[in-house]
Length: 107
Ligand SMILES: [Zn+2]
Image 1 (cartoon, rainbow, N blue to C red):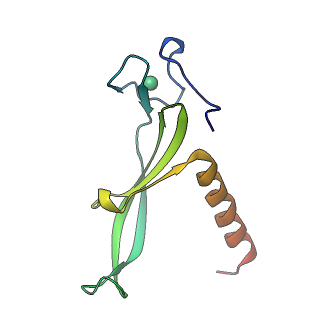
Image 2 (cartoon, protein in one colour):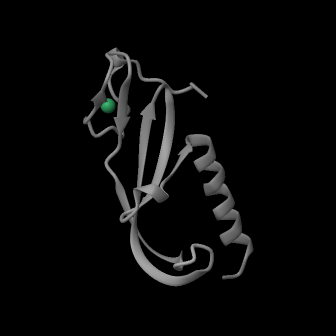
């Protein structure tokens, strides 16, 4: 990776919201504003294994550039612990797979 870097003196990527956590001068973290995706999901029951409940939530989706890499995060609004943060390449693979699934499978 490390293909897309925005050194501190070159400004922000076009999707950056301009709010930075800057712990070191050369370690600027660029973040997008979040996008919300309404979702219905099956959730694990009290035993933590069987997915026996249906619930609605908003998924927060965003982009972050940190340490020279670009990441995509997907977070249920009510549980940061269940977030997944994917490399840009992984998110693109997931996107292609979902496109294939919805294109090939009658749903
Ligand atoms: Zn920025």
